[in-house]
Length: 378
Length: 146
Picture 1 (cartoon, each protein chain N blue to C red):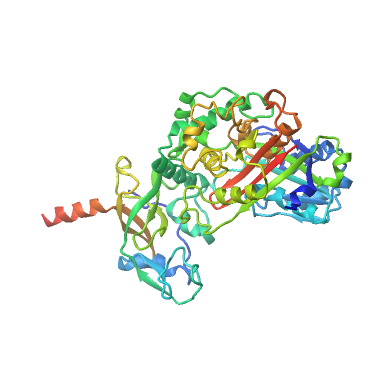
Picture 2: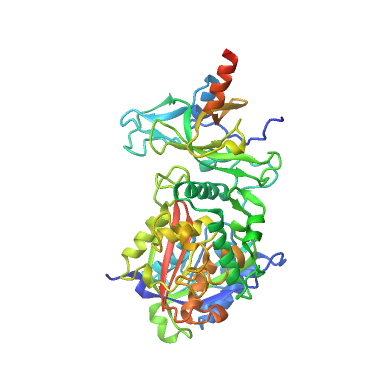
């Protein structure tokens, strides 16, 4: 199969300073990450002719275009493929010949989970929120909590099994000096954390931080000039299968992750057994379990036993998971730090947390009805 | 107990019947007359057969609990916590679900699969459909009959 993916490489990655309460603007952090990624690719801002960012909660691309003096031909803010849609769309634009080097960025400033203001004076809910806000459902954590509760009911998944995802991410964060929380986490600590929306507690939710990540995707014609080992996009998948209401899908609790994974696997001869490292979305711990099932690392309903005890998913295990600490401990960058880490692993640049000989990495983001995943190789 | 600080929708033509049916004690949903599909949330046409011959009809008002969460975080400082969010499934059609609150029930007694019935909470012309254990209603009836 002639795939557009083969016409694109990941040429550069960069991270800003990371922390909480940094007192720096989102634009400032985004520019740090952007310049780091562009420099990592051996390029200058004048080489960038495409730009893409998530269509929510970030500084608009126009601000980076102005600040860096970019001459942009292609600008994308896609919502298909969830958070990884920026990567998928940028790769498509390069493969289509609309641009050669696309800057992708995400900056966050402890962007909260509350969908609106905390004052209780939210305006009358519109659109899909009409069916949630009148029942005091204000946050995605409520929906993911009900996804988790249903998963527990159908499959016997336990709170402790969710905890193994959080604990494993924390162990990996200790090996990453950019991770925002690196202190040891015991099962007792995990179980004692304040409950947010039962069964999800504070340590089941990703960590709001101040940070930005940058990525550069380039035409595969750049391979010879790229200063880094080129990381290749093997296959992508995205799904936005309806209905979009989180509670109304008949295949609750798995949903669109399975559809996105099916598309991705249909575009490659590789399979789950070929994956050396998994950087799987952990906006909430239950979403990680859902992705492990959807991507075929275990059967439907068996992600709880798969992660139990942590042996399989820790560094040294059969499927090292979220090796930089994940959104749960390194911090929330809406899926793009996961991608950044996959690139480092495939280059062999992950330092103390390197998976020896990693040559195939999987990344995924999103949950419920909007999902995307990208398989990378070196 | 003070009235919960519910943020209710402003009514429009698409959803008015859903939010006002409680004035008659009826949980109203849009029903396709062409293919008999129940539609929620409401749409201008049937998402299954794409016909526009829709009619608002009362449902049985009973449901089973599909999933739930006890919310502990005070997202809205005017709303006392904890409270219970639930996804309930109506018997009229497989997968016909809506998000609601489970009320008049101890958290310890809540379980997936429990039988529920609608109980409206009025806010002006809006009647918010909440759900409570069907058993508690039956018990109250028995007690009042006794």
